[in-house]
Length: 186
Image (cartoon, rainbow, N blue to C red; front, side, top):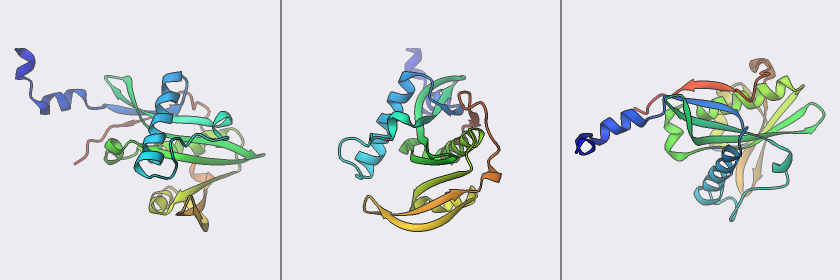
């Protein structure tokens, strides 16, 4: 009977994420959920890939995740990105994805980007690049990225962009990562 008395608003307030932890994956479930999220975004939602987006970069890339946390405990992977070194001191970020239900919470995508660049910077990165879908260019510009050229990838307009590394101090603790408070959508 007690459970019947709790309304949906109360449950929503009790079980909403209190924070998001953005870090490199350290556990198999984090990686598995990150790949599922990428499939949901790039295969189902955007239709860029058929079936799976996993490619020959994945086995040697570092996978980062944004975890929603309730009462300080990780609950769900709500964002991901991967980074890898393509040449000495040249790193590339790709497959940035945020779960549709969490895009309005704010700071998840930008915190993933910040940790991606900052952790590569700590590993000796001198150039950090990404192929950014055109609709996401304003976010990257706010985060101090510059467009190098416009291009079409996977049939969609993209910008090849470079991060201004001076805006990203090296992060030597990517396994712990960053914590950002959950801001409920208005």
